Length: 262
Image (cartoon, rainbow, N blue to C red):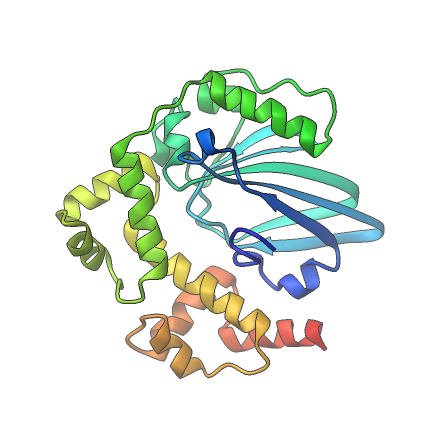
């Protein structure tokens, strides 16, 4: 499946029977800023489908039926309604990557959907068709024309987001601050400036995304063991976080995924 697999896509077994998902890596010169390109296409002549997404801590630039839009880091579960036939092309930025293009503080982009000019100060790319190769070429040119510069603090923020997502010994902002050799206050300032969301939120979101991904792929889940492996002190805390972000308890979500597998 490529970068990140299906993590972040809730009940992917159901979703991937309704749409096609493709991902590509960015060119080398844009890799410090862009995590990858993605495309979703669907043909639902018989009806509609609603796909639930648990977003990553990053900005996406997408081209769909409403034109180009900038989607800031989303803290809430997002539901994409797919109707008829359609296609969306997108750019997933690295957690701190869009800070090099944004004219707004990253905190103002959280849970926001903006036009490209409002977000960057530059008119949206001009495209002649919605063919992925054509759109990608136009977007790459658009990004290069803004002459982004590699920022060591942005690179540090990206690295710390990755650590928070992967190191199960990181359970809090305090743990991440120790790993980074920063004060908690400096860590929060770094995330506010370059990512938009706080380090504690990043830790919680990554744990729930991984749990949801495990549930979607497994026939049976040992909840106590899963909570422990994901760095939770107790199962009850894990269940609260999961329900708050996914909208279902882990057991209810598991039943939904198992029904689709069946």
